[in-house]
Amino acid sequence: MTTLVVDAVSVAYGKDEPVLRDVSVRVEPGRTLAVTGPSGAGKTTLLFTMAGLLRPRQGTVSVDGTQLRDRDHAVAQRVVLVPQDNGLAAILTAAENVQVALIAQGASPADARRRMVEAMDRLGLSGQADQLVEELSGGQQQRTAIARGLALAGDVLLADEVTSELDAQNRQKVLDLLHEEAARGAAVVFATHDPEAAAACDAELHLVDGRAELVRGYSELPVHA
Ligand SMILES: Nc1ncnc2c1ncn2[C@@H]1O[C@H](COP(=O)(O)OP(=O)(O)OP(=O)(O)O)[C@@H](O)[C@H]1O
Image (tube, rainbow, N blue to C red):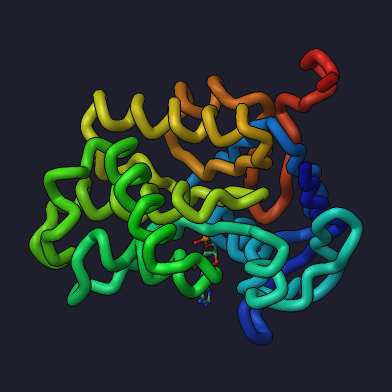
């Protein structure tokens, strides 16, 4: 059970003015947190910071009390990111994209294959496993990236607008899967423009002009046993 804590974080690109200012939030195991806000508000920036890809100018991000140093450290702490642009290798098949990530994490080829098959099935992509990513539709690519994220079975799952290319049925399936990840104990963060999806999360952090407001918190929920 892993908790990720963002404490008084300010983040800037280069010498620019900070995009995020003094943002604090707890990402709790077994819970889903929606990150909302208008385009350009800093949702991706916050998720990248949580993933160890951006170093805060001020403040800290820590996982179970250990301050994150960089992306490699975050990976070792089992922080999984499903990026907005899917981050897939176009010249590999969907299955290879998932398996390579698992093998890089230390899985045996046989285990990687088994977990890939299971994850692709959960996303309804069994028929697409052996297709090159560049031959898949935008929505199929997005679901492949989610399958890869689920297969990695992280303790923290950061999902950046992962339903933007999906039809209503697949959108609901993905939202259900994110909640299933929380149900197995992961701390789940979901950046979204979708008010309904945000409302279905346990808590919501709203970003405006670089500032964050917790519009709904976990305190209104029953405490975990
Ligand atoms: N690599 C970068 N270099 C400089 N500025 C950047 C970079 N990436 C993002 N920004 C700026 O940071 C701000 C926040 O961008 P970010 O992508 O985090 O917003 P967002 O809320 O995820 O937007 P969207 O909903 O459109 O995806 C924007 O003003 C953007 O121009």
